[in-house]
Image (cartoon, rainbow, N blue to C red; front, side):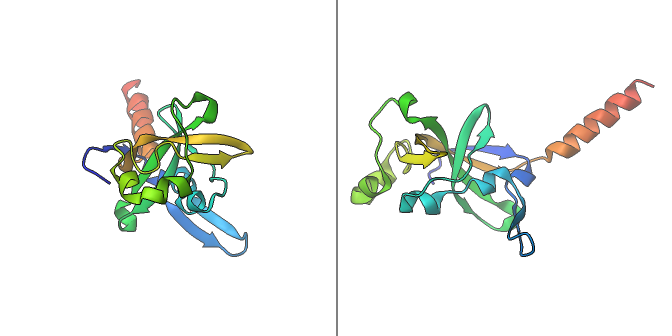
Length: 152
């Protein structure tokens, strides 16, 4: 990803990749951002995984990189096809000229048509990078504790 991409901090739990629970036959402890990873599905034309909500919009993670203690997630905003102002494309069409797709100022996945929950959506760039920040639960606990002591 290029240097012009906005990098934002999120609760580290949202990036957690979780572990595979063989008894339950599913991931446990996986954060919502990691769980939305759909880069593998987009290339195959399969429906994307459940998007996550960030700053009032729905987003989809298209890649995660780095060591587990400092993961970086790259995500695109998800909009309904009817709300996209442009010409949507699919992965196969976009990659016919992969060099041009990689140079797209709005990002590689911008304008890409995807399916989710039986409907059609479009990924909209530019992408954002999400990195681990402060733990929101610890912040809430500290605020609650501080507020409680202040009232005495």
